[in-house]
Image (tube, rainbow, N blue to C red; front, top):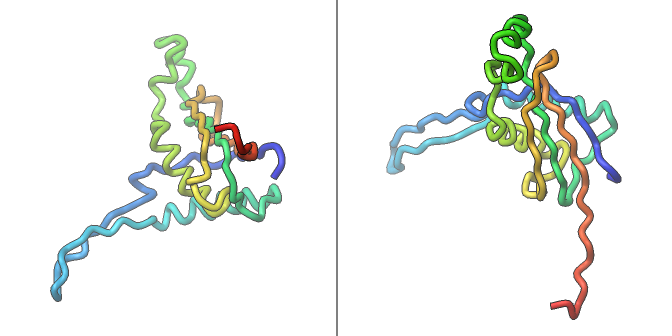
Length: 155
């Protein structure tokens, strides 16, 4: 990949709906344990991301360092103008939105194997909550980071 790609993706599901945990009871000489797994809803979200990536011609995940920028747009509510009158330029503080950390965790996992082979390749990240301007969505920009070769004798 040269340059960068920008994907407009569906609004991320909550981490509480992306991963779930169940308790496996003790039995036959083993201790009880908790298993965390990816939910069916998470698999559907990742499949939708795969379709979008395929549509723009991204067929192979990157196996190199990347920079990721996340712009999270919550849904603009029908009463947004009323909120603007009441709250001024801080009106969007009253709009329901997942937090940026939650968004980043879900996206990093959902993009793994689609945009990059492993989220360990994310070396730089920016994230920002945007003012709601319509439908809820997340805009992700991924850029390859090209490393300079190590030069002997500089140490």
